[in-house]
Image (cartoon, rainbow, N blue to C red):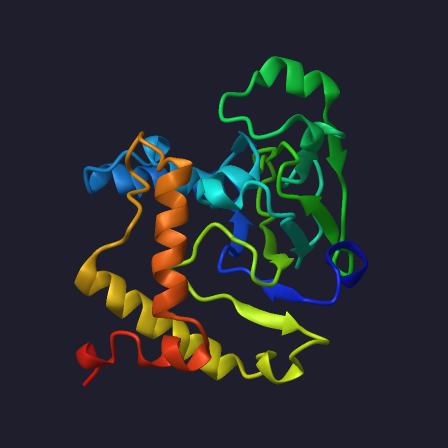
Length: 240
């Protein structure tokens, strides 16, 4: 990451654990959900980790003021990933065409490459690279992976209201966070605060915050939580 981003690196709060259920298990989950009155096929956030992930770029998940930040995703398989159990598909060079919300799937399929990987491999993706994953059509083979996203410290990362952490710093090495328990507590405080006061962004809404709105949100949260100690105090009035 230092070779790509420089010596001041923050791990952003945009990270995921992804798994692809085998086909029979995915059908079972759908049936159980249907008995409870839910239609998981219409749930975007359900399909993202367990079913077929459609074409997208990671950058659009962040507020507009982060779109010029060089964010890099480290996609790390915990199991093998192939075309049967749900590997990534990427469109080479697509990160050079700016932010795109509407994508032509047919054209992307013609240009895409499948990335076959195994535990010990790491896929490095620019946040503007268009990618997807194929569905898991295996009988009983789950595909697990997780990813962390990194950005230059003090640049907008897309989610200022959730805690990232400084992963490397030559200028201020004392700011590097090495304690996972502290990071966990930062998240507890942040989620508690958002539960009490509401999120500044509604992800169920079709309206995306404008650049000016995004900049205002980032300024507000930079002032509210400028350091680790501020995150740890955030919302503490709701903690027993």
